[in-house]
Image 1: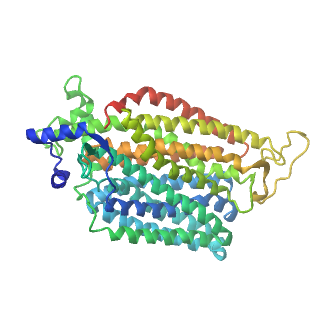
Image 2: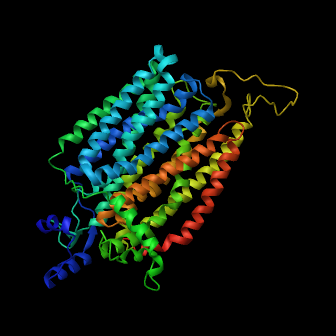
Image 3: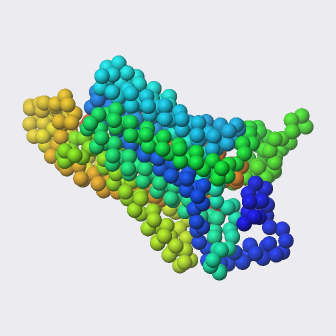
Length: 530
């Protein structure tokens, strides 16, 4: 194991015949995932607490804006998607801070403190006596100036920080002969359990805070703040155990300058070479700050990142769960104890249940049978599932609009055009005769799609980049969620009744077309990704 630590920074290749034979023997063995180190475990638990805070608070936002702040469905959805946009676009800033100045540990810690200040302001602004003065302004400042920056700075670093705690090489199993602890499979496990921690946190947050909201919105928002402080303390305990790659200048800036140089000299590249190879063209007056290997790694990363182009649309569909699904559920019959956003609990539960089944049952059996489901094909499966989900949601919304007594909530009576239906001012009284339990299949399908598309996307982002470029690729992957939120902000223009059937149908069709194009273009990429 000593050689693993020595090679972690140098990225050395085996040189002697004995080392090459050892590597070859390792490849012939049964490949299994290694254990999750304590350092990675602490980071994963910290992420669980952060996700409790994020989902425990954010899943309340739609109902909070509709019932407490008195906003319309369209305005509430636009604010929700705007918050999601800033939460993910700020991930790029977080990556720059970690790479250039502070390293991942200090960056995560500082942004966590900013995050906590946002949760405190959110709690104070939700006090009933401050509703008319601090209510909406405090809510906006907390979301857009503090919480979104805090979560963005954490997101760009925490998953790669966890994965960097495992050895970079394959090595023999310490107790089982003929078995190899495979680095790539261990990374796959890390990201699956990291994603499971996200959903355990979400599961607990979504189950607890909506119930507490009956006793006061400020109390409901206070709980995420307390849990996140606990997470910060846990994260701090591991300070001396973490491997924290030293900051070596902003890789994002270096990457950008390399691409600009390549584009300017694209006409000077070797015939048949990709335009990025033009970055190797030297200038007598200005020496290059990158090596030929960096350029080669950047080209590989560039091709791999093309996979991310469909993700903004996927996230646009996924984010409906936080707002438009709540808009639908608030107009459906439900038990008094059930809040519309609480069905997201089912989404998280599905992920928590299925990830161990896949990790310890289905995927190992497939590997033993000689069949490994690669990351790109897993992503395709996830895209197909979310497409079917939105076909279902489109049909469900259609039947909700056909149900009495308020039909499409516009006041029009389809049975008597001359009659106008009075719509109550209190949105929680505007309920049609359709049970909220019919939404369950949608949450189940999105949960299964997340395992295949979202968790695998994180894994693919990490594995497809050279060590020096991992933060760049992870930031780009997280930024796809920001662009998905931008799509959602545009769609929020039509996020009012009676437009939802057309809104869901358009998203289902777009996702179906993009899934077919994605499979046609990228399915073979699994042959080249470890």
